Amino acid sequence: MKTKKNKSAIKTHNRSAYFFLLPWLIGISLFVLYPVFYTIFLSFNSVVSDITGWTNTWIGLTNYETAFFRNTDFTPLVLDFLVLELTYVPTIIIVAFILSMLLNTNIKFRAGFRMIYFFPVVVLSGPVLTQLTESNSTSIIQADSIIIFRMVEQYSRFLADILSGIFSNFAVILWFTGIPIVLFLNGLQKINSQLYEAAQIDGANSWQILWKITIPNMKSTALVVAIYSVVQIAILEINPIYGYIVGNINDNYSTGMGFSASIVLVYSIIVIALVGLAFFVLKDRDKVEYEMGIRERREKQAEKLRKLQFKQNQTIKEYFTDTWSKMKNIIPKKKEVKQHDSETQPNEN
Image (cartoon, rainbow, N blue to C red; front, side, top):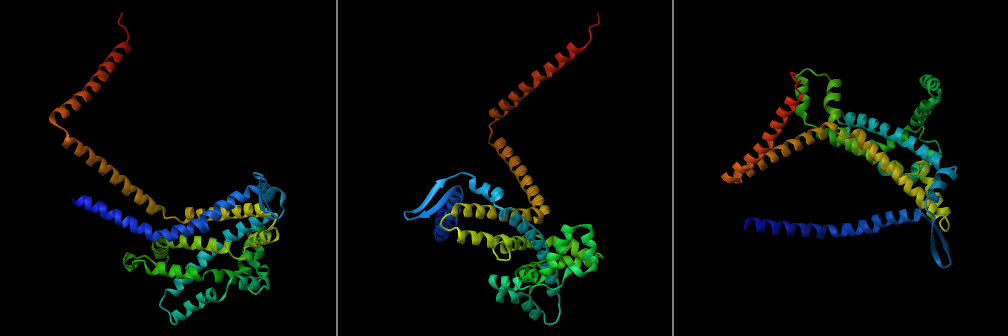
């Protein structure tokens, strides 16, 4: 009777949960899933607007061929976007982590410093940041005049261009670190202080504590920061490909919606791939292996318990029958082995 009551209670709770989730499910179906599948459909069509309305003509992969092989602007912008993401995101993670560690110490006016670093996130918006970037107001130093930069330039021009882009737009990177600093501060405050005390008792210095305790415990937070930074850079106008996509949609609204849908879909796939790369690099492999080990041990224990229950439920007759069938399978194998050995022995004659 108790089990039936428990099952009925679980069903009631499940129905209530689905009832509360129903508005969200309707919203995500109408405003997320439907536009995504409709964009995929439009990317394989030539979409034209005329007096009778919208006309869709199936053309297959022509829009994708145009984007990658006939259009001279899209592929270079994709490469610029990848370089921007692969340089900005690691820099944001490192700078935000260093600033969060400094802001987590017991210094005077700590709350004021935290407000200063978070204040640009509240004040500035995407268009404001674009105007500052176009007017070269975000550049702090000219990296071209530094001797170390010239040495790097002699070694690798590509690496020198990356460093120049980072230092030339360092104010933009600091603007992106507002939310990540808050996330890292939250992660640092959740680390158990007894770990630091135990490490200091064992004689560990600050550098060893940083690499053995702080950084391993912050990998999950760094993953969240990386995903947030990738998506944030992708939806702002400082991204070189963002303006091209928006301009293409506005300029070719009546005749080029199919091509616009194809480049939007490719852009979305690239962003999802970057999120997957961040997950692959920053995932906690030790935790995953530990959980897999626990799962394997639980499965072995469950298998042993299953066998034990099966033996307890067997009758004496079933037990002897099962044992005799196993012995009959083993005895012929032994006879076959002896016969094989006798055949392989050389004849004495």
